[in-house]
Length: 584
Image (cartoon, rainbow, N blue to C red; front, side, top):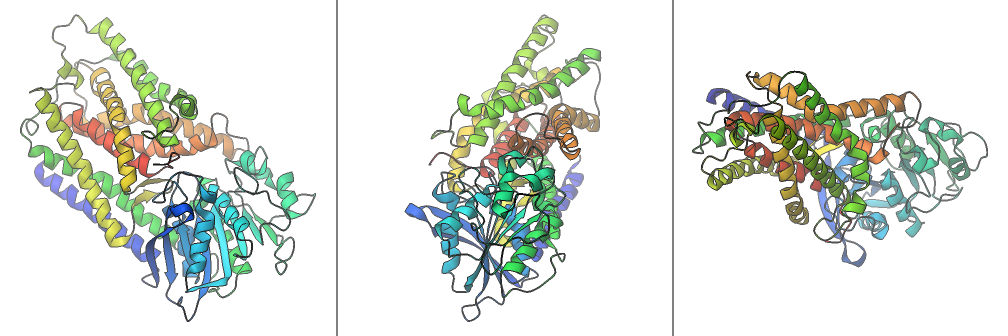
């Protein structure tokens, strides 16, 4: 890519970032009719809580409007509920989308203080423009347990509740009865991955026959979808909805969101009776998705511009390939794609016993990612070493440079590479900061997001970035040393595709297996539901990793810059996007 092309791509990427973000802002504010405001407030024992308020223009102290506390699930944040919040606010509800304790920008640890639910409800009720006689609660997954905790703490503080992909009596939530919680709507999707955890059935399509659900609905027969059980006036009403989607799909389903709207409109007074089918939230998702594409794309031309200004890198060439060829290379590539998938569930779910949360590594999910990465780094390094020893050890023409580990001027060259990588990610972070300030949005699509780090999360990230850097160096050597075929020169496009297949292809195969089975009516065949959903984010992240590693190797002839960018970006994304279990 020449300089003119880089500038054109850079301009296009910025157009996507700012154009997509402006589109998202327009949708989430309903064209300016809804004020969207980030808030912080003190909760139990001084715990600082974070949330986003959606305030319709008709809400005022003179005209209080009905309110909704909307809460995300485990290892998500308040932005995940934006589709629900946007639609509730369009109908006149004042919405508080809450960060649970230990999530987003609320203080750690996770799970503390009823997940933050009681504090969130108290704050919502304290607002003078909220009608305290018309407050609804909505929570997805663990967010359901959050609002159940709020309801238990303040039984007279709300009028109705809708649980989306959640249940009573699971985790740390109180058990449900025919009277608690008050006026309950249950939205449980037909292919929800957590059917056993939530309603104690093997497959979500059988939720109507859950004895646990039947007990809450006050029946000993199959629960009929769409039928209202109990009495709205007495607060004992119950209704079941089963949209055709999955647990994470609830956030991306007009049916699931529409069902929750319908229940709140039925059980609360004073809102705008806009039909539940009238939805626009997906345009916001499209806007943030375009911004995400633009943000990822931005790193390549911006990185190229930075490289052009660094002596020793602006004229670097790709070293001669000394890697594998023939059937052996294909076999090694397949092995490299499969081993990370085979080790994925055992290492991530077993990480708590290997690396328990502590002051330096305080995030359970991040620890799972780290244990998986380091174990696969060791396996990859061992297999690479075995191959080198048996094939290239006695070849004097093979040097570290051929494996992407060239250092040129030694430590000075590596330091320059690290500086380039830091500059690239810093450029993306500046972009993220700008759109957060201008539009109150971030870079995201569905369950994947790149969002700003809090100061605490920034300090946490420093613990994870160094070991992850080591993993990405090893991965770079695999891709650009061992698997780059000797005697030929791959085209850039072919290298991109091959490296993507090695790095991310196995996870695509895993997700196809998992969801083909689930959608056919059977439980997930292998692994853990939570880490299956996280694998979707793995697929996106690893795709970016493959492209970054390939591009920066082609531009610099070494793995250092790509490994730096990948380590910083992955650490940033994982740490900002998960829960902090240890109090820091």
